[in-house]
Length: 106
Image (cartoon, rainbow, N blue to C red; front, top):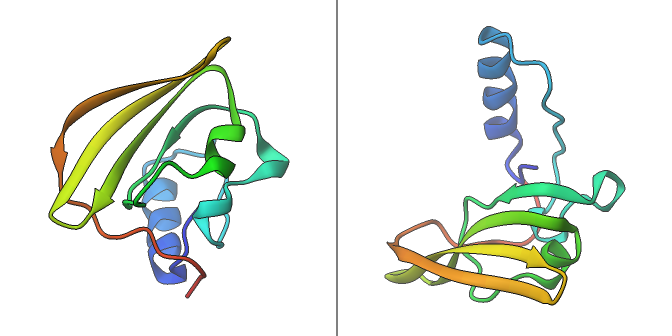
């Protein structure tokens, strides 16, 4: 899932060159996830929302792990979120700096 089309095209090209062909691509707003492909065993988020996106949590399979930076620029924390039978377990890993989580697509 990539909101910026030229970045997605570059990723496709790189993966083709590496002969990696088990990756699906979608040009869209990543905050909504990809409901048609859910549930996911793992989610890696490369931009920082200010709070955990509910839509992504809902698309996690039981036992799935999501790595996601949370917070405003300059004060973000990388979190590991694991879906359990009782809900979600959140582990704070370390302070990080990622680009902000933006809506829409380019």
